[in-house]
Image: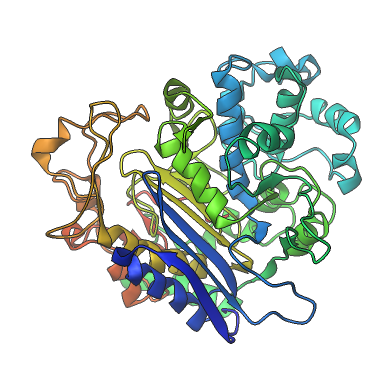
Length: 519
């Protein structure tokens, strides 16, 4: 179910230590898992990987290189989250203050106590509007504001606000920012204009030349696996091991799983809030100018990683400070974990105050401790305050969840296995770097050094890493799925042993099945 491979060109700069990552990235094109994609990685303040791959342009397609931008879908939430954190750092907004404080009209119909943090943590209870919105409405700020203010609360459970989160955040921004800017305008003027080398836009991006340089590369629609393939991968683990994701029944019996394929489901209502949005990539290709802060950012991998590098360096990069360390601590604090009904299995998600997801040991290709989010079809924006890594992956080739995870695993595995990333010391944030001499596994930290670790993200000092004794992953049984085959076992460091549980969609999950769907 991958895109057919064509004549490919992979080019760019890679640190000599990380040639294995380039090879892994190139293999995605060889196997048809990617057609146009970019990968960039910062280690501290150094850009150690900056590669781009593409097949021969089709008819009417513009050339594709490291400067090209594409829609990164829900990675937009990481960008808008940083913008909110910057606004909070300047004293213009407070996470624990109700939205109605800034936007009084929003307080009607039982919404008066919904806070900014609850919106960013997907607990606002308004994952979709009462009726479908028209694309034209998104271009009329006053009309959209009126409609959004009159919405009703849909649920008291957590449901991923795939698109609505950004719409509501925009209204708060327009009122809380002293200059009355939207999220997109704030990002353009306060981030991209001040941090050199940024090509990241929320809304219409400038046209660099008459040749089309600077325009967004179109996304290719997601290819879904056929029904028989999905059934086989749900039933085989169930009959062999008696459980899937720790449940007593396979998810094929789950009403939420069945509803994913229905237009009235929680998933589709949260995803498709505008008329025509159920056409997926076609909608976003057609409406590149819509400012949807949760789902329609245009970016390249280099800019995504660069923004992450700003975060892992405490809010400053190349002599430019955009946010204080204290502001980042507040933004990344108060992580709340709850089951999310957006997932077909009700998997648990963990969000910090500014709307970044905190990945735990149950994720498959994403190392524990990473913060950020993924975009529908495969884009990825991650950073880790302890390891000092910032990763940006952008692609125009949208695939279903399993291929997404395979693609991530291919380059994340050699990256994490090659680098020995020492957590920040407690002496002010200096990040020492070295290669692993023995057992090159994910951010291995000796027990006697754990007491010296200080996490600027507000997490507890000395938290367990995947290789440390006492890790919660050690007690989880192994459930092997034929979906990813032997490649799945390669995701697990040897120290894990039989410490992971793989569900029917190829995700690593705890015994409770806590892993969010890839959006």
